[in-house]
Each structure stands twice: as structure tokens, then as C-alpha cells.
Length: 225
Image (cartoon, rainbow, N blue to C red):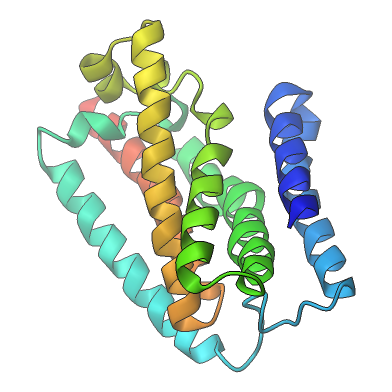
């Protein structure tokens, strides 16, 4: 467990505070290394959420998760009160949002993070703790994992900037909110992984929260243009 957490910590620092190329490769490479390492140490494919037995169940949960998120995001975009929350500057163009949603987000973020957290970390913790302990520890670490990626969150989102402001206080509040939100999401991902027995379900939910939101942001910007 200590090795897994240390690798995740170093990966996070490399991904956010070094070169562009290192930031692109760090998380995917670390996830593959962690899978190989834990497989070598005896963690089975089922423990990693990659077994064949639960693929069908995982796929059913995945479809349900995506459908729910799409519905919620569509409602959020339709309501004037919540629509500005989707105006993230990095997804201001449809082409950029498509590339991010279909390529960058799944390959650089969603699949590697789920392999690392709901695969390796959850499988490792499950050998020592009950599900309650696994869920609490895993979701806390997942929330802390997003501190670095939340830097400047309020400056790049018009809705959050209007509410929290763009100063230091606003940034701190934004980071705290991001950590709490991602920790809560991590708790749901962990539950889905256990309930379905497969990584397919948390991967689908994670992608829909990020990828569909990116497409929604582009749609909002396009409609406002």
C-alpha cells in the first residue's frame, strides 16, 4: 500500500509540475506500472476489476451511469442558473471539446486513474480493510489527488469565478470544493466498482462526468456566440 501511494504521489507531482510531455505520459505510464507491479505481487485480475466474469454486469451498470449523467448535465445546461458553470474556457471550441472528450480525457485521465485507484489501490486495500475502510481511504486519496489539477480552477471557469471570485481566497475555496467533490465522486466510483465487480462501470461514470461535461461546455459556448 505504501508503494502504491508513493507512486501515485510522485506521479501527481510529475504530471502537474514538470514538462508538458511528462504531464501527458506520467499518469498512463504509472497506471500500467502499478498494474504490472501488483500482478507480480499476486493481485488477481478479479481483484483489479479486470476479470471476465463481471464484464456483462459492469457493462449494464456503465450504460445506466452514463444515461444518468447525460440526463443531469442536459438539465444543468438547460437551466439559466447552472448553465454558466459549464463555461470552462479550455472547452470553448467544439473541435477542442471533441478531442478532449474522445481522446485526451479517456486515455490520459479516466482509464489510467480508474486502473490506479479503483483497480490497484482498491484491490490492495481490500486485502487489509473492510469495504468501509477501502471506500474512506480510497475516496480521500482520490480527492487529494485533485489538489494540483484544481489550481486556477476559478480563473478558468466563468460560473465559478462569478461566485467565488478570482483572488487567493476564491482559489482556495475552489480547491477545497474540488477536493470534496472528487472525494465524493471517488466514493461513488468505489461503490460502483464493488457493486458491479468490474472497472467498466466506474470508467463509464468517470468519463461521462468529464467527457460529456466537456461537450456540454462547448455547446454552451457555441450557443452563446
